[in-house]
Length: 505
Image (tube, rainbow, N blue to C red):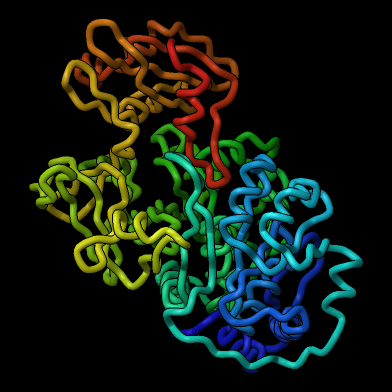
């Protein structure tokens, strides 16, 4: 088991001059990143930060996130990632819950931290990136030398809140040490270059974003997703690995000149948060010419626990149906599909709730023992809340969150199944399906569709398309068009936002 602190110590000693991190045109070696993180660690000690204290970051992606991730590990502090996309009142609740000793924020994000939030959380200090931060960590670069135990909490990440109020997920040193094993399973090593675009307050950012760092490779960080900039960075740094949600993959393919871009270095593009449609995948494989892998994981599992590897991305032939799967569990992850009512294992092919057991599973929810006891049951099994079935070969087919399930005339309808059917239509860019009131059936599916540029089908055309592929009771009885769909920072569709926007339609 290696902590973040031990990893940087190891690479700074073994390959000090190798590139570790690049951000907005500047590159830091492992030796430089080690030194900077030690300076930040000494600054934390000067603030009186002790093992177990929380240090919160409120900023868009920036290089300092890595040095503070390492600095917290060097003193035993818990790094708290704050979502800068939240409203001030939402941030106030999270800051009050986490009770950090100090918050370090970007100048643009500082205004989100209200006076009320600072007062209620009892913050000792708020430090703003720039000259103030540089002066704050301008002291000694002596490594404090803290090691840390496997079960000590390293990260406190708040769930996206797709189904309710965010909860603080406690991820231990042992949980996060699996990132190194994941990196190696993805073919990462000292020669790898990883483009990181996901927000670092999210497990898809700080988890996946530390994977190549763990194995001594080069991490290229983006401040935020920009498809044209991503293409430029892949060319400039000879990027070998990256992770995007399907919506970003779609945007990449719309960048002018993408067909002529020099992307031959790209070996693996991981995607997650939602399945990738066949139409999109076919074009992406043709244009980007790299391997694709789907990842399934959660904040509560410290990242990816299932994957659908490149060899299972066949567009044609008898194995093409695997593209509807999110893959199989890693060897160190146990998986069951459970009837949520009887709590018995269901037969292959039957829908139930995904239960997971692994040393990757979180320590629990911060300050919420009851919520932890509801989520982690029977000696360590995590109830994910995700509805899925498993085939005889162990491939998992994700249906939906059980909380998003639509019950129409006594029949269970999983929105993802309807969404997958509509995503197969060439005019559809993205779609969200929710349940809306119905006089006869209680609920009925309604689809909100974003069309591809230049496409103008009628709603009845798309409904008819689903009726060729699904039982009629599963098909939307109403379909409307929208310019965008609400998504959270990880790219997941916010069903509760759709239900708020269309409550009585």
